[in-house]
Amino acid sequence: MSSSKPKKNPSTSRITPGADRRISSGNGNGSSPPRKQPATSKTQEATPEKPAEAVVPAKRRSMYENVMSQFNKAADLMRLDGNIRKILAKTENEISVNFPVKMNDGQVEMFTGYRVQHNDALGPFKGGLRFHPGVDRDEVRALAAWMTWKSAIVQIPFGGAKGGIQMDPSNYSPAELERITRRFTFALGSNIGPEYDIPAPDVNTNAQIMAWIQDTYLSTVPPTERQRNIHVVTGKPVVSGGSLGRDKATGQGIVFTIVEWAKDRGVSLEGLTFMVQGFGNVGSWAARLLVDLGAKLVAVEDVSGAIRNMDGIDPKHLSDYAQSHSGIRKYPDADRIDHIMLLKTQADVFIPAALENQITQETAPWLKVRLVAEGANGPTTPEGDAILQERKIDLIPDILCNSGGVTVSYFEWLQNKRNEVWELEEVDAKLRKKITGAYRRIRDVASDLETDWRTAAYVVALSRLETVYKERGIFP
Ligand code: GLU
Image 1 (cartoon, rainbow, N blue to C red):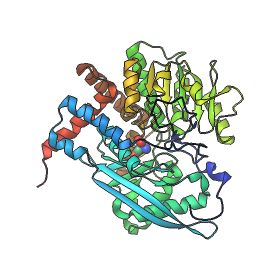
Image 2 (image 1 turned 60 degrees about the vertical axis):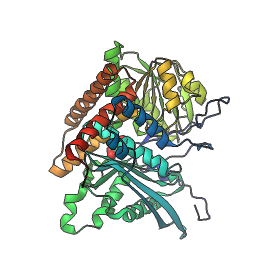
Image 3 (image 1 turned 90 degrees about the horizontal axis):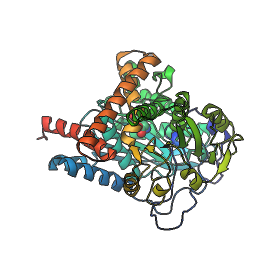
Image 4 (image 1 turned 120 degrees about the horizontal axis):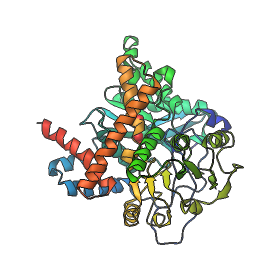
């Protein structure tokens, strides 16, 4: 940030309700005594809020290396065609743009934004845009690849992409955020488009930001074409062409997968205890929907801190409290705990719904849960995965668990293309069908191949991609 005056705008958090997840973490090296973790969080599609204080670990592991380690394990197991393996191991296009924006004080600041397009064999590139200091090419590459697998798993006709701006949105006023968003959209130019690459909300971005992108993009097309291009983004406000149910979609999808798991395991949802890391859009919706089914929320962590009450926490009340008190930390109806106590809480289910690299060699041994349902993208490192498997803790992998967001994005895109408006019940029913179908495919592959669920999820995704490449061949 180049300009001199500190920028702090207390009203940023009003920008939009809703948020997804994000928590930042220790780097998972594992050996040392537990470091104090930034309690963090913010999930995708999040309301801009304050960042954690000590968040970015000194040395971050390469996220793309994590993706490749997951990918290679599945590719070996299923004997993925060697040529297709080469293609999928690389991203297709990587766009990075530096652009200037005038700040409220008249100074110009330069920003760096990215859009990485991993693969479009199954349909147009699709995936969110995040605004966060941790955004860099490696992270965006990893997130773009996860989008390719996610869309393949739920069988929607999209490829994978991701993008973002390396910035802390809580340092900017709403007017500055709007100018940054619009200038970024302009800089991306025809690298996005309704039939080519369709952004959506992600960490610290939301429906309002999608509306600014939509408006900027539409301003660059001839007036006669505008209406035909409104699906250039999804996750828009409903009146601007958004879908009912998109706001809660990621949380809803998580809950649908947990419901299936509970059925499979003969576990009752009534009284099922769970904890959530990240209380933005994803974490708070998942908590509310799960409590509606009779489950009990016992611990929560967000960017401000962590709390616990084994008698149960009311997620709706907590969400309202967090909006008006910049986080959950001082919530009066629960005890304040630290990050390590949170991870050591005894519960049936843990929903990491914040940042990546949370369940590591260091932290995985602490968990006292039966199931990890990954609301965040990439919350578990390969070392963390191995420990969960060894400890026989079930896992619903991110590329299945949080695929509800992109699934309802697809429904929104379809509604826009067809000039339709679907009822909420219709959206929910279609989402349930898609996500439970994917859950069962992965469960069956895991059992047939006697492998873990993440690897099974990759096998499901890669098989679909392998088929399409084999059908079409490689040009020329
Ligand atoms: N950002 C969300 C994700 O990681 C949603 C992407 C979309 O709707 O395109 O899945």
